Image (cartoon, rainbow, N blue to C red):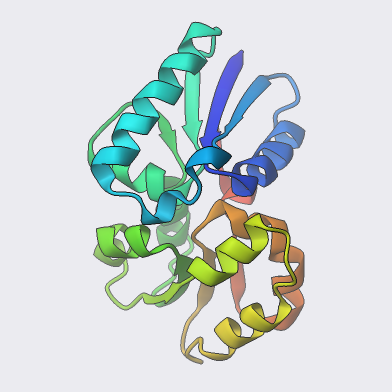
Length: 191
């Protein structure tokens, strides 16, 4: 089965690498839309228009499903009821199944603004991750920004959600710095 993946940059690449390992019998096609990076600052209308263009390209080359790997784009797609595989709902479902109550969530401005996580988790502690996400995309040293973010997570949070697929690329740096569970969509996503 040929499946397309759409993301604005490196996050989709990290997601693709891990999903490809988990589902080796499927063929994946990644659109790394770096000319439109970052999605997290674009309006929902522009994101939906961009999605339609990219999704049509994937359909034209034979992809029968599309995974929207970007949390910001996924949020817009899921809110508008478009039939694709998003990455936000699986994370929310996983968090509900694990009975988390007060997650800390690193996300883009538009993901935070959408309230998609806060609707299910009213006590969520939302962390604007724009600087960290840009540093990951540009392959810069993220350690200081990451440490600063982690130091501001309230002690009563019961998990940390990597609410942007770019953060998949640095989760190996996050695990040793934090004592609560870390949720990364590439580890829980199911086809």
